[in-house]
Length: 328
Image (spheres, rainbow, N blue to C red):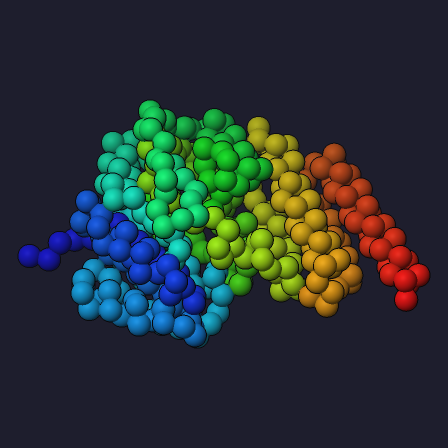
């Protein structure tokens, strides 16, 4: 008798052959067996498709979907559309699920009744994580306590109890199955995380590490800053500004949005300085103005701070251009 699918593991893939086999092996060796793994290849030009196909031939629980290159948001959405499990989880093609991950996440879901279960993660750079922190007590958060954790996640993408990225979280399909990522090449989590996390009133924070995140390998945020990158984040911030969040955390949420806004403009400025031609001054100015337009729904103080930040950005660019003109 064919086993029913409890958890759908969604793995977006693009030119990931270096670590992809390890990522899929970490799914294959799960102690929890009622899973399927949906690999969506986003037009890879390396051997990624072959790796996915080989894994699917060896284990029928793996499914492979191939599409023309459309970007990470559309790829995550394509996987979500194919989900058959009661719940789903994302894993990036260069990361690892610890062997007890699905078992622990599913158990917490069943015991707590939470629509969202968040596992702990550990960063690593080598072949395997060197040390796994000890298990802690799990915690069910509801109402304002959960909303505050989401704000913290927005402000501290990897250091808080709730990692900002979409991976390492078990989402209830009945609740989240109709939600979608913005279909761009960048900023997939910038919109998805606030949208999904503020949609629930209670979530369970797992006390044990379930996910190993490979640091510094393929991060688009640290290696990419171009016109499309800026435009994608601008769209995400505009969508975030329209979120209907609880009144009690509206002010804190608005302040939180400022943090990645500052970071985006710092990265854009750095790219403008050290990689001429990749990002133009006009594109940075467009991004800054767009943030101001998106901020119209925020309280007055965050809007004022953002205006000052954008003004300072333009002043820095003007001084830089003067200096470059003198050198010429």
